[in-house]
Each structure stands twice: as C-alpha cells, then as structure tokens.
Image (cartoon, rainbow, N blue to C red; front, side, top):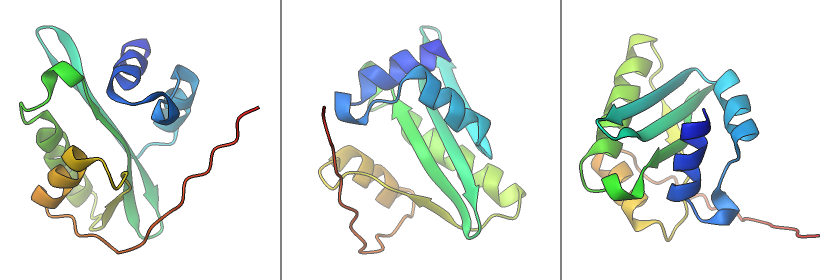
Length: 125
C-alpha cells in the first residue's frame, strides 16, 4: 500500500491526494481493488465500493509516466468484467469537470454523464 500511496501522490494535485491511511480504509471497504504492474513496478490501481444501486469507482490512478499506454482502459474494463461476474450491472464514477483525460476515458468506456454537479468545499485552518 505505501507504493500505491506514492502513485496516488504523483497522480493527483495535493487537494485530491489520498494518504496511506485513507487508501487503506478505502481498500477495507472495497468490493473490488486492482493493481497493475509492469517491469518498473506499480503503474495503476483502482478501488471500488458497492452501494444499493451497484458499484462506485471510488479511485482510479495511473502513474503519470505511464499515461497513454491504455492502462486506465485496461483497469476499467477489468473492473466492469469483475462486476458483471457478480451480477452488478451499474457502475458510477465522479471526476472533476476539467479532468479531460478522465472524462475521455470514461466516455470511451461507455459511461454517460448524469448531468449532476457536486460542489467541492475546502476549509483550511
């Protein structure tokens, strides 16, 4: 998990990073979790949870130097396959409206927008 946390820190801006303890808690609540490795180590991961309507892709990250290799598509396709084998037919995901790479990936994988928008609040002490 420390390697996954390092990947998470490299993949996201500070506001969106999840520290090791948060990732470990998410993993403990997961219906599915996947790590993808190549010769250089961990290059991507996902953590998904279950809810009454199906499943939610809570976290997906690909190491920045591995972008453009189809790893995100591979992870999402594998997740969809795993969920179908569990008779889970609905998968949701949230992403930032300016995250063009994520939006393109999810559209390519067959996701459609719900039109819902969720505000983000941040309080700093």
